[in-house]
Image (tube, rainbow, N blue to C red; front, side, top):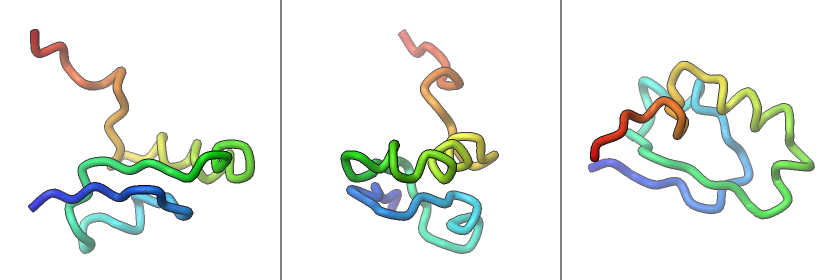
Length: 59
C-alpha cells in the first residue's frame, strides 16, 4: 500500500528507493525549507520525485 511520509525531518528520496516503502508523498516540518534548503532542493531534484509541474492535467 502506498504510504505518506508526514512531518519528516529528513527528506532523501534517493535513499528510500528502490528498497524502502513506496512513498507517494512527503511533507516537512515548518521552517525546514529555511534550515535545510540544500537537502530540500536535492529532494525535489531527485529522479524519484515527481513535482506538481510534472504531473499531467487529468481534467
